[in-house]
Length: 436
Ligand code: ADP
Ligand code: MG
Image (cartoon, rainbow, N blue to C red; front, top):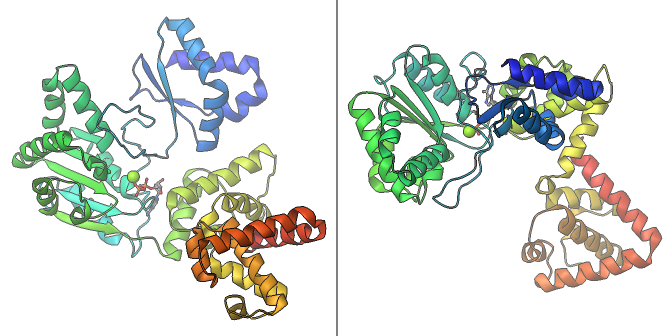
């Protein structure tokens, strides 16, 4: 839109440095915006967040000044975030339900973990409504369910009327149309499509009216041999809050799962993402990221973007392994669950020059008791385990014994500065160990 260009120009004249870093690469999503709802695409989550914080009200203002319209503005990235829904009511959308052109079969890396799901999706795209109806894809977070679902949509959108929505949007629209007393609008939209793609149907759980409506939509489309594809974080038989007749519909077609990718697949996915985003990372860094982060590809992508954005902002031309390690360490710091009891025991045993088994033994030897106390303190600081679990693991009587030990430990930390320094060192070590 010409107007968006004008807004950008105006921001450019205000601050050229920020313009180049954050504004220049924003794109206006013409296809999915309306005059009252603007969708702006940012190249990554880092920029999106910055623009939201610093520029949203300014853009809002400029748009209103030009058009007299007060619009709702969404800054989106390629990442899709879903907020679990508690109530069957209208939910504010952070992510519009749109097909993202980059989510294609070509940009999807196939490995043993997702081969089955990929082949099924491809087959559905090539023969909609014929082979597998419905297709139900399930798997953990960030493993590519949305990508595959959208790949079907992108493949078919030129010749068919494709409708992609998240289950939340389906629910919102349904509720809104009931409220506005315009159910026919809803029916028309959903029952007249050729291909219906619904993402994350686990959010239908417990929403009985929506399920009821979806049941009718499903039957109508199914009877007309229209293709339906669904995704969820678990198989239909484990969607406990789903009415039985809907569950049996979901089970009637083909159910495929996506497993976490193997290391090789992970490396290849990272390579592909870098290539698509114009980011250059040497092989050793790609491998490093693949081994250090777990299998949530969305998280891995976030990390790549972060490394890239950090290097740009800091003006680094060549990203080194050390730089990547540093960036990753910051990231891992936020993730307490990554550090396990075993990590702690290993480190403490080494530091105190004792055997790991001695730490969890009943020994009253002074050095061992001291080591055990440190381990318990670190376990409380760095793992997400509760005090009863910590008590059990380290052989203490009960959770109050853990609380008591920690209280004493904190007291000593306060009083003894030498001790405090030693513990700070230990804390650093345990985090660094994990990110190496
Ligand atoms: P899910 O819906 O299962 O939570 P997504 O489909 O949103 O996961 O995937 C998260 C990110 O990881 C997306 O950017 C997607 O493109 C990417 N991704 C996941 N699996 C693959 C793959 N096999 N090849 C390429 N990209 C992938
Ligand atoms: Mg998804």
